[in-house]
Image (cartoon, rainbow, N blue to C red; front, top):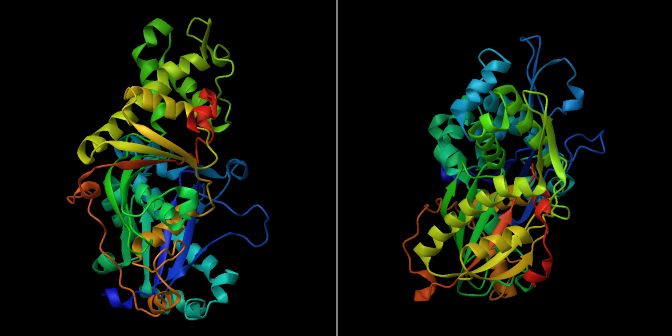
Length: 466
């Protein structure tokens, strides 16, 4: 059985909706977090490893992972954006079984992990920064994966409700043994990971102040989550607590809301189930192509014929009413619950993945009738941000990107220290908010790897965010 003292390497894993990323750090070298930047040395466009599985027609062949749709042709059954199936496992199992007998969410995840994790370790072994780091000399040894793999602890970014499911997948994939899961596998929700990312940045950019509390609201493809930061003089002394998360309120929920509307009004709109599926598919395709904006609200976005052959159309304004505003309402309610539990919040918004979110911000604030004060700050997305922050979340480190109180001698002492791995912070916090005053900043991370630039279809002037 692997023990806590045996762990030398933390591997952060981000199984994103469209692509997966992996990062690593040595427990005694927390300043250096290294991310895989290329998955194929022979291809210039190999920065992203797609979260996809291809089941070949010959069932005796091992499934292929990371395959692009254009490379599939008629080679077999292609399952893309695999983490989307975690939202509703029962419904996903039914959908997958229609593609191939015996295909389930668990089988897809297990097959992907069997392929991706060994590949990720091998790609880490050839990273120049890692090879040149003396603390990784054992790791880059060609026999490491076979002989010393138990010194690796994985930290997976995953919604709370699916962590037990994914733990089973890791075990059944043979990545870890059940007896060592406690020490070799950990989880973090994305809001907590992004909170660690914020703490690692220059405070002149983030505006984070010492001895203040902040909320981090993350809106990703498959879930939303809130974490709380208590900022101290350094990142090491600061704490991050996961408040809550919900796997059923991510951005994929927009497509669900659109489908629910069509089903509810299928008689009036003269639709059948086949037409509804076609319209939802068109809706998703439009999203992926970033075609939404509010410069011309009456412009037709989706056009199709009803069962009588007559045209049915949806404008930007229609989709705003049907999809986006109800979605914002649900997010606002989520925020309000945290606000009520932890005191009035001054909101600090963060945009990631180059997303333009002023319309979202405006409506979220309007919903609370101006009770929420806010500052607006744009946080540029960096490659591997989530996977590297997963590493940070697992390490009790002496990172000093913001070294406000450590002098050179103190930093040297920290770097020489053998760090242990902290227990995961519980979902609910019981300590007093901000020493009694309850003032929080809310950092909103809009993680839109699948629906990037969604908010362009409801773009407003950024002056309101100055």
